[in-house]
Length: 140
Length: 140
Length: 140
Image 1 (cartoon, rainbow over the protein chains, first blue to last red):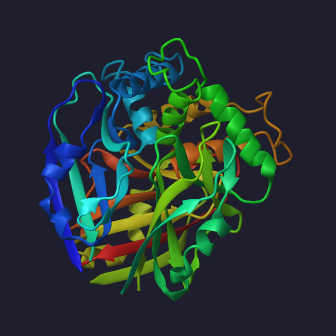
Image 2: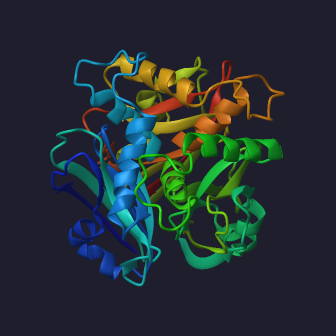
């Protein structure tokens, strides 16, 4: 069985939802040696998140950003955590709604995503900077 | 250690939340040979999702559908992705809130779910059709 | 390769979001023998959930509780599942939004969390009691 674990940074992105499948796979040539297994990708931050969604139309990513900004507003009257900027506590809440990791099957040396699926980095801060992720690959 | 990976379709479901534990397990006799491990189940679509929730009272599934329709409405004024029907972009958003995979422990040859837990297929489209999933089982 | 699976209870918590990293790790000395791998932690209940979020400022946990109470209200007019108390169906919905499991990388014998990350038990019931979890550790 093959096991690999690697930590790397995703390049800084502006606030919003970003397709990062190619960037992730570019860091992980180890995927090509796995016949059947999974990739677990974990983000080491609490104000950005990872999800799987539509890979073709950029308006989907825009609508995701607009929706979550409306559903988890800045400056809600019930927030107490407000010392790090008005984008901070909404970022934490969005991160838990969307999740800090994705697990994707690997089949025959490739991520086994659906035709229209890609991995998103969801950057919830105005200036989040580079984001560290840990990739763990296991399979045979 | 045992490893298995299998791709299969879940039968078409109407829009809503559906208990599919039996349907999933029926495709995976391999579970019975795992003493301790996990099942990772991944849906290869971006307008349907998988979650774990209550397995007994159908009103829970109905309330989930009604809640998510209210929280992620059709035709929100801020949507730009509107060419595939008014149920499409809400389906993508719901899919990321609920998630495209579930990972469930396997113990002594069975899914180790709580007494009241089951696996749900969450069908967010009006006519989603059959849904492809990839099951990866690992353990010993 | 090392495999371990263990079931244990997290002590009863009041309704809200609680940092449980130390409590979880205290049950799992097996983590220290894993060089690279993952911990999968699964909660066997449908009215409590697990997530990863900020580990330092308790107002984050308070804001999470206040936000989800607002986003998933009690006594919404569209709920039909109302026989187990007004906190019950919101608890189920929150559990699926936040998720019933977390998967965290293990590196060099420790959970490889970011500096500001911790594991949360999200208790959505007013009196949820002790919560059973299944921990599965795999790696080498």
